[in-house]
Image (cartoon, rainbow, N blue to C red; front, side, top):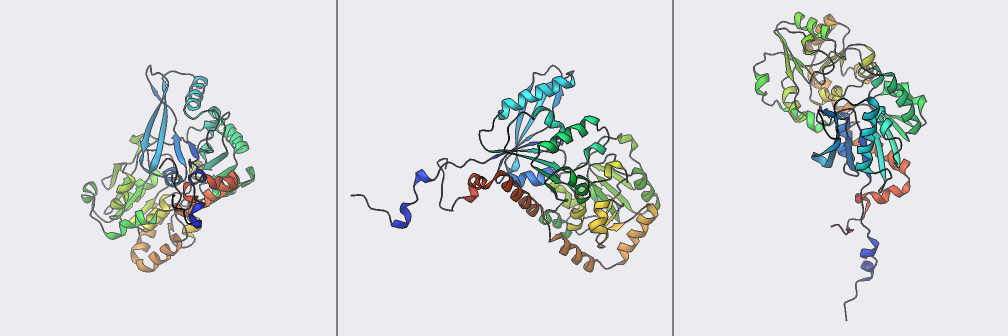
Length: 405
C-alpha cells in the first residue's frame, strides 16, 4: 500500500500548479537599443524580470531588400526586433509594411496578457488596431521640440494620450506640461544606478586615450546634438587654456564639422555604459553645457545624478530640471555663461569636498532605477487588475514549480 503523504503536503498537487507564463511587454521605440544606455534600457532590463520584453525599433532601409523582421537577443532577456524595408518606399507603404511585419510577429490579438509601451507616438500609426491589456506612454522627452519633428508627431501624440492607460514623464517640468492632458500622468525623473557610477570614486586607472590628456579635466558624456551649446564649450576652453575638456558621446543630428576644435578640447566619441566610470574617475569637474532652447526646455538629464554618484562635482547651465532639485540644494553649480562657468569651477576647487559629497549621498539615497521601476510596476499592476498577480512567476510560493521546469 503506498505511503500516505502528511496532511500539510496533500494540498500541493501538480494539478494546482499551472504553467506560469510571463506577460509580454512590447516596447515601440525611436531609440536604438545599442545607441547609448539610458532611460529605456534602465527600465526595460528591470521589467524583464517580470515580463517577456520585446523592443521594436524603427525600420532600417536596404537596397532591394524583401521586407522582413530581424530579431536579436540582448543581455537581461531583451529581444530586439528591427523591420528591414527596401529603399524608396512611400510614407504610406512604410507604415503598411511595418504594420504587416509587426502583426505577423506578435499577432493582432493577445495570446497572453500584454502591455504596449510607447516611446514614440508615431508607432501608433501601425499598432492602433492591435490588442493590448495595458497601454503605457513613457514620455521621456518632448519630442515635438526636437530638430526635425513634424506636425504629425503632435497629432499622433494626441491619439496616444487618448489610448494610453498610463502616462509617465521623464522629468517634473514635463509632468507639469502634460498633467492636464490625461487622467493618469505620473512624473518619474531621471534616476541612478548608484553602485555602477560610484565605482568612479575608487581612483581607477585612466583608459589609455584619456591618460594622455592633461589635468585638470572637466568632462561631458552623452549624445552630442542640437541640445548642446557648442559656443559655450569653445568659450570655456579659451578661458581655461591649462585645463582639458573631455567630450564623450556620439554626434547626432548636427554636422560633426560644427564641433569646436581647440588644443584642450578632446572629442573621444562614444563609449559603452560599462566604461563610463573609468573615464569619470579621472575628471575633476562634470560639465553639462546644454543650450537653453526649445529642445532642452523639458529635459531631465540622466547624467546629473550619474555625475554625482561618481563623486564628480558638476557645473551646468540653467536647465529647469537641474536647477530644481540639484542647483537649489547646492548639489550642482549653475552657470549662465562662460565667465560664470569659470567662477563656479574656482568655487568647487576652493571648497572642501567631503561635506558636499555627504549631502549628495543623502539626496541620491532617496532614489534609484529599482525604486522607479517598482513604482511604475505597481501602477501597471493596478491598471491590469488584481488578476495580474497570477502572471508573476515570483508571486508563487517558494515550493511551487511549473511543468516547464
